[in-house]
Amino acid sequence: MFIDDVYSNGKKSDGDYPLLSTAIAEGLFHPRCKDSTSTYYPELDDLDGPLSDDELAELDRQRGLEVQQQHAEKQAERFDRRAKYSLDEDNKRIAQKRADEWHDKADMLGEKVKRAEDVNRITAENVAKSGENESSKRNIIKSTVVNKQALQSSTYRKTIDKLGEDEKISRTIYQQICEMLKHRSGSVYEDLSFIDSSTGKYKTRTDFNVEQKCFPSKKMMSMMRDAKPNTIIGVHNHPKSSAPSVADIDTALQKHYKYGVVACHNGDIYKYTVTGKFSKVTVDSLLDTVNDLIYNRHKIANYNELLDRALNQLKENNIELEVFLWE
Figure 1 (cartoon, rainbow, N blue to C red):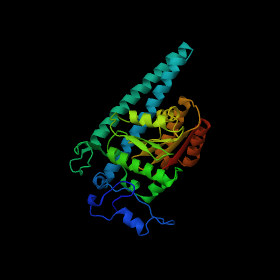
Figure 2: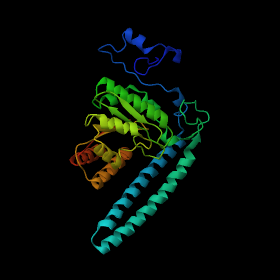
Figure 3: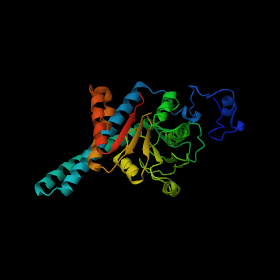
Figure 4: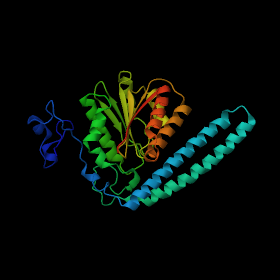
């Protein structure tokens, strides 16, 4: 373990550990070095303790409810659109009836999800203070606690390298992911980072506390306006570990991202690149399919074939989605 005085402005006074610069001077990270680094967060130790079989079963049940709820919401939106735009009055009436049924089902599932979250919610009074402005006694939702084992592994770091950036940008992406996952572990909130792949500069918003939404700050938008076209990488976390939403995809198009990255709390990573205009309805449906397939992958015999088909269909609709699952 080292104090990072090379990339993160650490100081010898930060702790009783050697400096990373000293290790590098003595040969660490030589040209053929296979070592890598990851950020250690001691305050996450208590958050990611081993779960009992009953707790694991309860978390699986809750995630299943969340997937069902999301599916019901999508179906309700689909029939709402059909009811609104159909030219035939009978079709309008039938579609509205189906939409109402799906809305009722989504509401029912939403209540079940909320009750399950309440059951799994624990107080973090024994969690070490993180140094953030939030209270150390904030509520922790166990189903959205970050997979620390994945985050601190060399495999995870190598997955970031697969995004295709040089060492400096890859390290910045990794460090920003670590920071946002540390900050949002055990919550339903999201942080957002803009990273300029041509300069290495970045800006992050960590104070937007609306469930499962994130918006750039004024400084981030100013940074984007000043950047060269298609150089900004947008990175944000997904507490419920789902694929990017159609809203994420649309943001990447409207803001001219080089590409977007979703860092999931369970260790999964998604990279999405938008190459042109797309049908929101079609892409939304395909993303639903991707989420369903990934969640149920251990139960589907031809999972890889079906996932490849969905990803190819997304590509045909100008969305290149790369999936890196933590197993």
